[in-house]
Amino acid sequence: MALRLVRHWRAMGVDAPLFLGREDGAMREEFGDIDYAMPRQPRRSQAGWETLWMILTLPAVIRRLRPDVLFVAGSTYTIVAFAMRLLLGRRCPPIVVKISNDLARRDLHPVARFFWRAWLRIQARCARHWVVMDESMTPELPPVMAARGHVVHDPAICATQLVPVRVSRSVGARRFVAIGRMVAQKHFALMLRAFAAAVQPGETLTIFGDGPERPVLEALAASLGIADRVTFAGHVADAPGKLADFDVLLMSSRYEGVPAVVIEALAAGLAVVSTDCGAGLRSLLGQGRFGTIVPQDEALLAAAIRTAPMAAPDRIALLASLRRFTIERSAQDYLTLFVEAAAARSPLQPARLDQEAHA
Image (cartoon, rainbow, N blue to C red; front, side, top):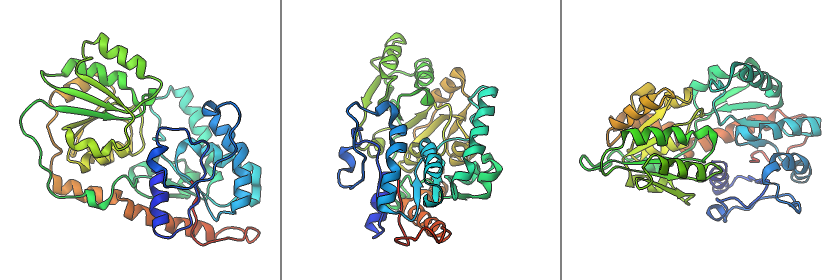
């Protein structure tokens, strides 16, 4: 999402430098047209300690580029923003953080959740603005964050994707699809078990994405007797562009913010079946109006899969809801927020440009 925003801002004529910790990820070829700053790479791969490497190297980049605003494009790197405030002090540019995941984290043990909330309160003062991707996430913000909170909807789709009519199939075996990193958060094992219990003759499941859990998940599919029904497609350059080939999107996450893949699937006209993984998901699906939401329960998820329709209902109302998630709208909302943040910077920190973003 950060890469798409940077590309869009640059097309608008905005000076939007981009800082990356490393460049050896699966998306490298997809965004080869985007210039970026990257620190000198250590002799050993820092894939396992990328965040620490970014903390060590980003201050020099900030001193060289002198950005008006430091934009942290996801919750994963909030610790980087916190470190910049500690290391740079008054010379740190105003920080805008996008919260990309569920903050309630009801999946955690109560003790772990206590320390999670304490960490949120500690980091709350490091940013000028905290951005949530939907109004439903605002009540989850700790008070200090809420006082600096703003809503900028997740820019998951383009306005051209919001067409009123999609030709949907009404007969034939359903084609299920899932998209995501194969990590514990996405809980693909739950999805596979539920799919195995619900699958009907001829039905298939395609999973786009890769990650450390893939070998275990492939073995699980084989043990469940559905290896011939499930395709592990790995990372693909444009998974959303392939959604028109399917009927139902499945999601089994333990927690999410406002999942872009659900927005993309709804725009493509797919039905959605998802576990209850956060307030953002519930809002996105209209509390169940635009898709099926079930608890984190194998039997209930299987039942929802078994009865899933072949297309999302009430498309006109759905499109009206999805218009808030277009990149054309959200990119401008972000720029307005950046200008406000830059205008409030200390006189000791002269701004280089009125509109500049770091991701």
